[in-house]
Image (cartoon, rainbow, N blue to C red; front, side, top):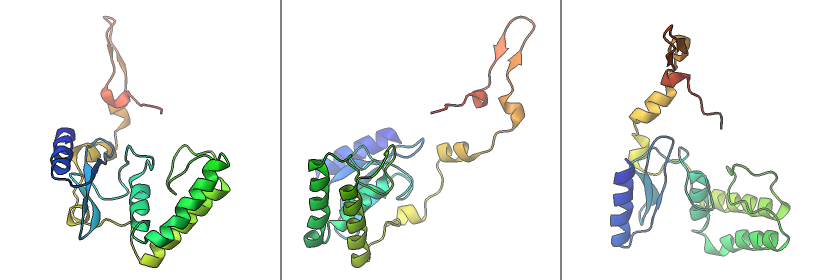
Length: 175
C-alpha cells in the first residue's frame, strides 16, 4: 500500500493535481484535491482515520483548514489570530485534534474557534467526502490490530534446553 500511495502521489503531481501523504495505522494512503469534492482520500480509510506529515498532524485538522479556506474573506480572521499568537510566542496549534499540545494559547484557541465557525457557516463537513470512504472495508492490518489476542497467545515459554519462546503477540510497544 505504501508503494501504491507513493506512486499515486508521484503521478498526481505529474499532472499538477495537489496531493499529500495521508497514512493511517498500518497502512499507506494519500489524499488529493478534486474540483467537485475538495480533498478526498484514496487507497485508505476515510477522514479521521489517519494523519498527515504537515503542520496539522491529524487528517481532520488538515481537512478543516482547507474547508475554512473556501471562505477566504472569513479565513483571514483565522490567520490574523494565528499571527498574533506567533508574535506573542504561543505554541502553534493548527487543529482541534492536535496531539502533544500542553496548552492552547488564547490566540491560537481563538483561531481554531473562528475556523470552526467559518466551517459551520459554510455547512462543510469533516465527514468522509468520497465513495471510497463510505464503502471502506478494513485492511488486513486494521483487522489484525482490532483482533483480540488470547492470554495463551502471549505466554512466554521457557524450555529445558535454555531456549526462550517469545510470541509476537507478547510484544507491546509502550509508546
